[in-house]
View 1: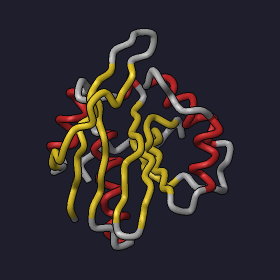
View 2: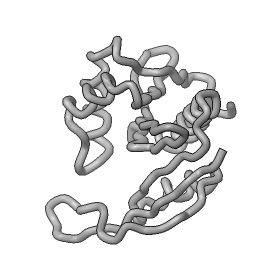
View 3: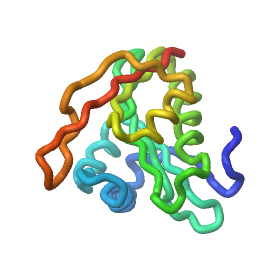
Length: 159
């Protein structure tokens, strides 16, 4: 791993229902349509969902996380979030790499995701990690308070 030494990545599991509050707060801080605490509680209870959290080693402050869902030999990244003041420090890369290492161990062969086509930083990250563009969903993301829709780029990674 080539991420910063003061970042620790761990699995957030169903034994930590209080994590839903932190996940929800960070997600809502990062996205216009952030997920509810209830959504995160459902993922924490779902045996086909995986959540990896990135924390600052000295503070245990949650600075990012990735949520994945597995189906047989495939998985999908449902969301990837890094705290705005911790971006560009390799945290998203570290989360993706850790998730991919885990997925390989459990015999997942393909990883999918959708990303807003205007989120250039995310598209570049996924391309750098080896994801291939496999299509587009027109008008997939609605912008809050304005009636415009952005396309989703569909991407996949083969193990």
